[in-house]
Structures are given as C-alpha cells and as structure tokens.
Image (cartoon, rainbow, N blue to C red; front, side):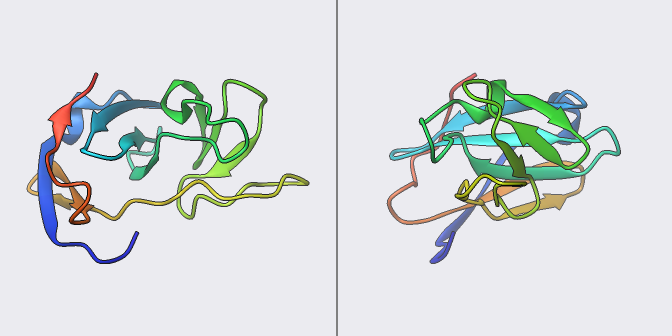
Length: 116
C-alpha cells in the first residue's frame, strides 16, 4: 500500500500463532497479519481478489497462504498469486519494533480497532 500516514502498533508478535493469522479492522479494510513457522511476519488485506475469501482463515504454509474458498495460493511476501492463478492480494506495510507489530495505514484506514 502507498501513502502511509500513520504506523499503528497492533500488538506483540507472540500474539500471532505460528502458521496462523490475526485480523485487524480499520475504517475501510480488514487486515490479516500472518506469522510463518520460521517466525516471519507479513500483512495482506484480508480479501482474496477472486471471491473476497477471508485469507486469514486460510492455511499458512512456508511463506504462502491458501484461500479457504477455492485453494488459490498467494505469496505472503508480495501478495502475488502462485502457479496458474492470476491476481494479487494487496500487501500492507509492516514493521517489527521491539517485538511488536506495526502496520502502515493510509489516511482512509486510520481508526484501527481489534477485529479478532
């Protein structure tokens, strides 16, 4: 995402399960924050570009997530669809500072509140 106007602390990395995700709701978007088995953390909009599937409910494997609706696979690093699939899940900028996750929000997204 571009035009970041605010970095928001959304909690400790330890609150995100290994090979799992947590979601956060902004004013305009639900953001999925994923943690891989090798402890890397990534953020994407929680919306598959094909059928708006909730990516946070997908299966995290390696540095990828599989959409729970139709098995489309996305790179957690770039959001790009893998294999023969086309499309891209929007990437959200993320930083880790002193063990806490900070996501970069646009002016439209400011107003972060915990979603689940």
